[in-house]
Length: 228
Image (cartoon, rainbow, N blue to C red; front, side):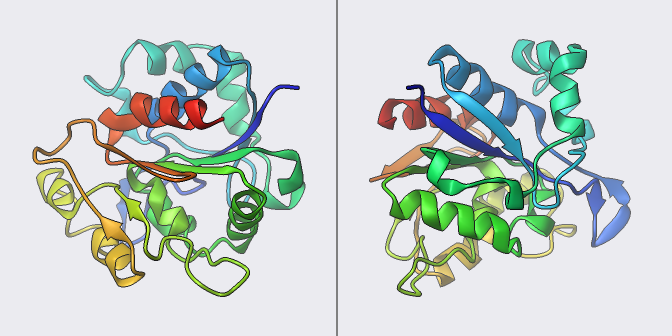
């Protein structure tokens, strides 16, 4: 029986701190994972906090982010249709899945953390022996997830994700609603990052796999697949 994975994407299409700035799913962070999981024969379900449409981050459709994988998805109507009608958390039975994987884009900072549905799926998959993965801002989805004993899933765990230095270099430090790197540390996570910004950096702590930035998407997905 093939492994089954929940892939999580955003529903947000603009910075809520400044509606004039569009944002959304960073496409290659989804496609790199999808390609790797598909190669392994895994069954994949795309989920978003509210269900329905997942918009694309405009900057992810430009060089160098708009690579062969992202372009192949973007120009395939069948693939794009998957992002027009994503499942809501209420349609997911965590017992049916072996892993959950959070994609990024700054948009997820606004709708991932407060989603009790995503928290439920993550908690149950993890506590039943499944794998939890996140790349770039995707780790915002783990910020408020607690285990059955009330502790934060990330407490005492080694992890990574988009760094504050990268926010500054991306010139969005004035737009983001909070410093996710600092918030993770406040939750008790042992955060680390690469010496250089925007290079691939992935951390594996048991069944928790996290990648720092878009350049980490392939490595992060590969390590999730290896655990499965």
